[in-house]
Amino acid sequence: MSVRELIVLSLQRIGANPLRSALTMLGVIIGVASVVAVVAVGQGSGVRISSSISALGTNLLTISAGGQFNGLVRGAAGSASTLSLEDAAAIAELASVAAVAPTATTQQVVAYGDENTTTTITGTTSSYLGIRAYEIWQGSFLNEAAEDYSLRVAVLGADTAETLGLDADDLGSQIRIGGLPFTVIGILQPKGGVGGATDDVVFVPLATLAHQLVGGDSLSSISVSVVEGNSTSAASSLVSALLRARHGINDSQDSDFSVASHDQLLEVATSVSDTLTLLLVAIGSISLVVGGIGIMNIMLVSVRERTREIGIRKAIGAKRRDVLAQFLVEAVVLSVLGGILGVAMGALASFVIGQVAGWGFVFSLPTVGIALGFSALIGIVFGVWPARQAAVLDPIVALRYE
Image 1 (cartoon, rainbow, N blue to C red):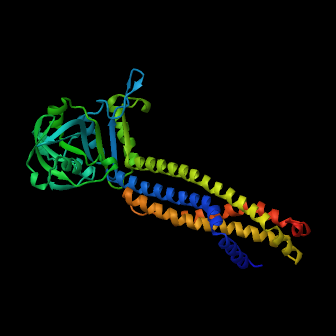
Image 2: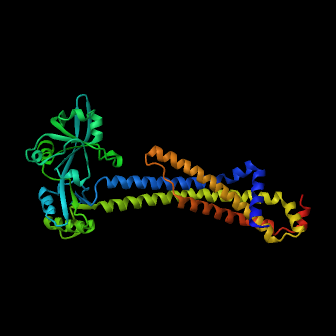
């Protein structure tokens, strides 16, 4: 028989016992659906993370205070007072640096009317808006006059404004930060960063935060925009060398600061996402193997049930390879049908998860091809043994089988 005839015969056999065929394919269906859904989730979350990191700004270096040893313990990044305004001014003189925004942060209670929330208060300068790719929704951002005169003015992130019940009509209203009155001069467009941290924030002039809220001039971090076309890695090396020279540090292992670039963050996030996806795919593949064992078990039962049929076929001239091909094709057809149903279920699960998570429908055609190919391989691997059992049956013994 030709391959086409064998496939048609296999489909007729499968259709004759629909319930048993469905149960046989169940393991493959679950395995393929798991793999397709997991890959879609991995790709969707990867796109979401990449867009969140891109929302922080491009060509961006972030220098965080910390990393110095306190006795035998190295301090956490951003927790120490190892960066100063003088450091920021020195970095701004580098040829590869386009702009610099020194920042200091603190957590304070922010209140407006009967509403209040505890959020991050970021003291910074006017250059921060462009470096970190924020956009103004209403009003204006901090300016040089606000910094020079330590004005009590505030610009709210989108989430903070919503929490306090402030909108465009409330520009000029007074909010209280740490018990002190501040005038709202602007509200930002939402950025949608990871965990909403980029939108739950209040910006005030750096000098105002230093002198009226925290009582110190040290910086938490310095945001640096690299000149377009220049390498962020090269700029990172120049900034690190400059700060080590200013801080009197000879060994880079002893640096009391850390420098992270946008590309490094993206590379780390992509690597973590790919590793988790690979791990979950490996777990999902176990279901495919279990499904293959189920197919082998049912095919062995089928060989026993059809022993007399095999004997008759051999008695009228069928060769071993004909019987081997018949049962092997039947196992592969069962497995591939399970794979097709699994792809449909996986696509449905991807759609539902994408809608709930907010990254839309992500579906990878190469993944579908690999999943179907792997399900066919499962059918071949686990169908060989039952097919061989059928092929080596003695026709006389098979015809006498009761």
